[in-house]
Length: 515
Image 1 (cartoon, helix red, strand yellow):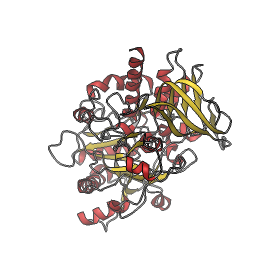
Image 2 (cartoon, rainbow, N blue to C red):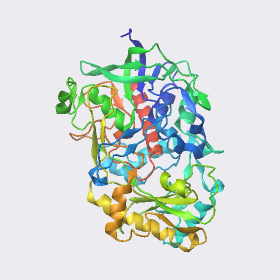
Image 3 (cartoon, rainbow, N blue to C red):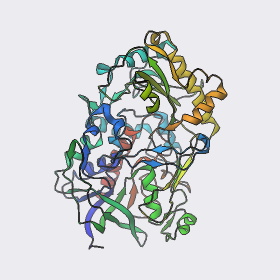
């Protein structure tokens, strides 16, 4: 291993949270920041072209994780995409800008995450919205998105002017991170504008293998510099840094900030001896800090897709393919939505789409899931994928609500506004009618919503991993900043919440530095 470099802050992972931290911490010219990113420096053109986001799934810029078999999904293994390049999963996500319901964050605070209530995060939502392009989808929307909203209103869903405003429940237009058909995610908005700063180094093809913990303090990171893979196809190459291939160590004089997301962050902590002692000993890893909650509380939104064939070809998308949605409740009396019925003007299922390209879809999903799973080491090999178990539909309430969401989606497709445009339902099909048949369809077709969260959650109880300042309990000099710290995933697409967490974390770090 080569002699260790030294920086003030080492940020592990250049995804949404890591990009925000890199940009904010390097605003101080006297602070030296290194970002380690396992992905390469080449950005495929499809990252920037908003309607082409789905072509990146399964590509070289996607980690392409798989879950363990899911009992709630009839034993199926589920594909879990995660971005593998600077900007991380903000390069793969569908570009919806949704803060989440105020009660999502207030519940975090009630559960011990002091300082993370909605009122606390509101200035940071405003800050990120001033930094990252957020535009209304309506002016450039597809005709079928307009028809969907008319049909939703006919089906009894009130219109709402802004999912991020005082009334989230209802049918409405999304705000999107798109400008002139181009994605404006964390890479474009945060990381790239900071790359020319002399005090910021972004090192690509650098795979973090272990945190260096000495005498109860995290003082650095061991990583493997991999040889870059040759660029293929259209795209651009970022001006990032690399060292000679091999194993290296970097030391942090102030803090190490882990920003790898809800799958890789708990894995790196466990590899470093921070986690459940029995699991670590099983893999021959010395216990540095016994934290039984590392990797627990892992969860994700879950969704499925209904597809209807259109009478005429659907115009191609100019934005993100999903411009409108309904947020609603599975039963009266709930103070916040627990269901999202997203509309996309393409077939949800690629196999169905090959035979029926002229089709549109409604994606019913549970956005306040009760099911909880885990992320655990498969071995002590840092390059081995972890055992990922979201426990989809493990809690009966999630099944019941998914069935209700499918029925509500069918009501929208059956509304008068859609009648001139649709030929008939392709999925689940006319043979699926009873609640039991719908449940079977859901178990056969439910899928990942790409909103993995919760595996290093904030709190003050024995299973909490980080405290309200995002410091890892029992280890000095170490914080986790990403979706893994969420006690519960917000009731909507969660990119905005992750960026807001990182914005607030940057202020907490700066305040601690000055103190």
